Image 1 (cartoon, rainbow, N blue to C red):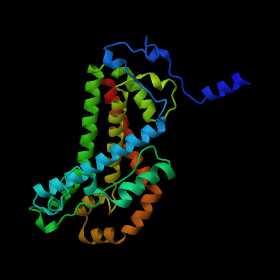
Image 2 (image 1 turned 30 degrees about the vertical axis):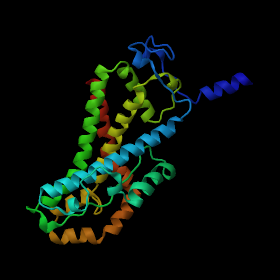
Image 3 (image 1 turned 90 degrees about the horizontal axis):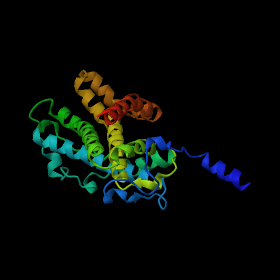
Image 4 (image 1 turned 45 degrees about the vertical axis):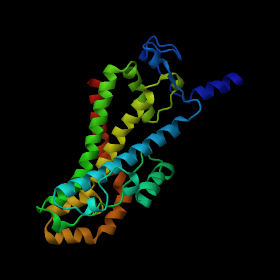
Length: 276
């Protein structure tokens, strides 16, 4: 009976083939002494680590998004956001009760999304202050572009660590599996660099997700604010007038629309990470 119960418990895990990490005994990793310190997940469940890392990456991505919009608006002639202290990475200045606290928790614990959705307080802009008619559009677009740039920076850091840090290359296989919520056995023997690799990889995932999310053509998102500059006057008014219907459509098909762009984009980053 005890043997059957043990086999049942083991069946819930995916045991990584030893060929993926050759000649690396449990808790004894080759290389310099600093790389032999194991990353222990015995006391902290992997799901808790993933949620914590994802939320921290989301908050940083939101702060970067709003800070860059405020900075771009100021550079293009509108000091409104700068005067309100929005050119900062301080989360308190961008905090929105629903977008930064409630929505991410709902997305994880109620809707069971792998990554949190979230946003900060709208960055205030005064259209007449911009020096050009496209100034507001460029300032709005700076937010999502900054998040895409952050994903690229995280990718570059991972590639550098892959070639310079001992055991980083082997650990990346586990990083992708853990980030994909695949249950694995033997994570307590991973090297000390593993948490940093996991956090950087989650930064790629979160920033790409929020990049795609913010570019949805909805009146309350950056994509809609950019789109309205290309619409005829009457169409733009109608677009803003029926924004409530777009909110309903977002809750119905928003996740599907995001995944259409997010999934292939993440695949491209994964291929680059594996090949570079």
